[in-house]
Image (cartoon, one colour):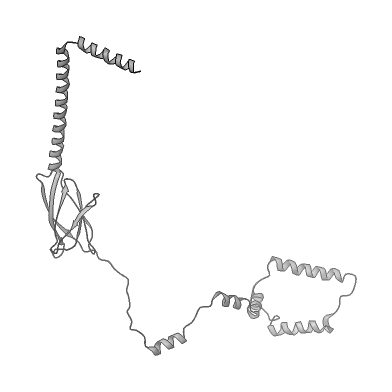
Amino acid sequence: MENFSAKLTNGIGNLLKQIPRYIIFDAMKRILSLIIVSIFCICKQASAQFETMKDSVVMLYGVVMTADSLDGIPSVSVSIKGSGRGTITNDQGVFSIVALKGDIIEFTSVGYKPKLAEIPRNLEGNQFSVVQLMVVDTQYLPMTIIRPRPTREQFERDFVNMTVADDDLEIARKNTNEQTRRALMSILPADGKEAANYALRQQATRYSYQGTTPPINLMNPMAWAEFIKSWKRGDFKRKN
């Protein structure tokens, strides 16, 4: 490998020796000229971009005032939209900020409607002044009634007479007591399951006494007790 490198180096050296020197000097001049022209073009382009950037920078200053009384509004947020840069007005509503031509300036303040202002792109010079008027943003809040603090006697009276809503346990207890269930039985019709059970019981009673004389409950004390309970409950009253 070392012998090959040495042979290659010697071969290149011998080839350069055979080339005339004026050809080598001419090639070097051409390369140097191309390098100088490239550096000049790059510098010229950078200078043109710098001049363009320098011409687009604008010193923006002005004052923010109320539209009705022309009073300066302090602490107004003056921001360049989309750039994250901004400032606020002083006590007299005056501000100043560096911006670019074509930027949109946003004015916002609590209690006033937001405003937008655009710096002209064809502005001549690097200064631009603006007098921005802002309109009051009226907010209608719901009415609030402020009452005096109650006395001890009023608090005790209201606390004693206060109606406390039933919890789930109390609601369940009221819905499952005997009176409520009987009232629901008297007004609610039987569902399918209850009707089917009643029909099956009637059918079973009829089959159990088939071929015989069914007993008469006139002498049955349990039947009389159930009849008296039903009479007291009003089960036999005519329902409209």
